[in-house]
Amino acid sequence: MMHKEMQEQEEVHLKTFEELIPRHRIRPTALLPFWNIAGLALGVGTALLGSKAAMACTVAVESVISEHYNDQIRQLMASDDPDKYAELLQVSRNVLFTQTIS
Image 1: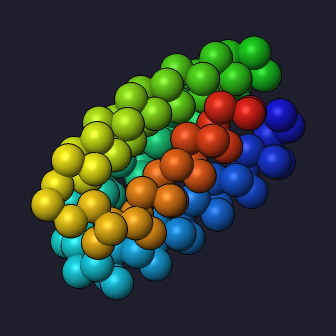
Image 2: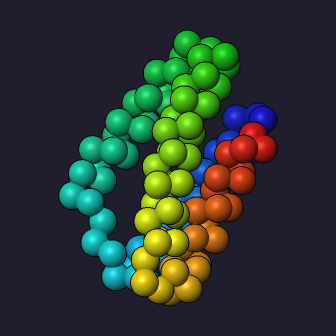
């Protein structure tokens, strides 16, 4: 996958979560500014090391994120009302699917 495609994909994911957070009245973490800076630094740092390093970093990060999303999906499915979370589950599955094919 090309860098431009990866960026476009991540922008879609970001927009989706930015819409879901207020809709479901979820308070964003206070660490969000830190994570934004850390993510940018990680992306720039690995990009400076070359395309292979950037892709290796992306694969590693997506692996951890996939594991995290799968844990969340399992918790939501085990809840009293999994249908209540259908939209969140679909978004998580879409993100996981996109990561799998990239």
